[in-house]
Image 1: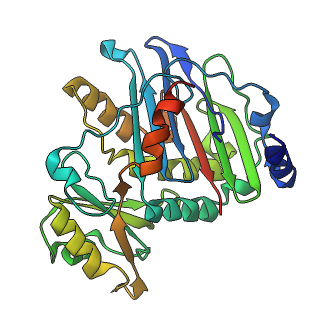
Image 2 (image 1 turned 90 degrees about the horizontal axis):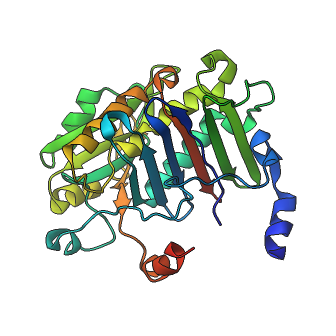
Length: 161
Length: 153
């Protein structure tokens, strides 16, 4: 069963969005869209090992993001949104927030979101054109800081103990 | 769906994301019906035993349990003992500035990666046990059969 999650923003470069999802069996899916420089949609899929899934769960637990609450966060708006959904054991969170809220408001979510560059650096699929690899790299370095993300981000993680 | 309802009663839910009954799925997103690209394995990749999968330029090893004060150079030295490292990433925790606890090491060939995994898995680094394994695996066999069904959803 998939947990739904979808986000994006409409802007100068079309409907830009960045989504990825981890499932309990290690399946990882990724979708990245932008019309920046006439670029187009990238969708990739890969399977990560149990070691990786274990580390993912450890990072989630350490970050205490499951204890977080989005009731005080600025709500999503027409400009864009970010969503995070995690099902871990018997806890299930699904947070929404608009783009670029101050990090101190987001608390644990801000730091948690910076942990997830690790898989995307090492996607196993081939990139057919150099233009795509450029955009992928650009998105990667920008993800180091939530503020510099111009695409909406969604992270949906489904792990069961 | 009765089983899911039962399960969901035991689950603690939190967040505004649940207020939407139908989460929109737009074209191209994770929920969209377009196909996902997968790694096109060559002969050489599939001949490797086990379930590991190659990445674009090499084989990637995931190392966990790395001490938070570990030095990247020390890690590089440790893993370079077995074969030449093509790439190494030791990510930091953005809040505290220490090492996050995992590293990704890329080797050129399957044999080199396997050798490094076998030599370092379960050993001590900075007085802490580290674990090493391949980062990516091939699609599990039963998934391949159901991919077509899933694709038509």
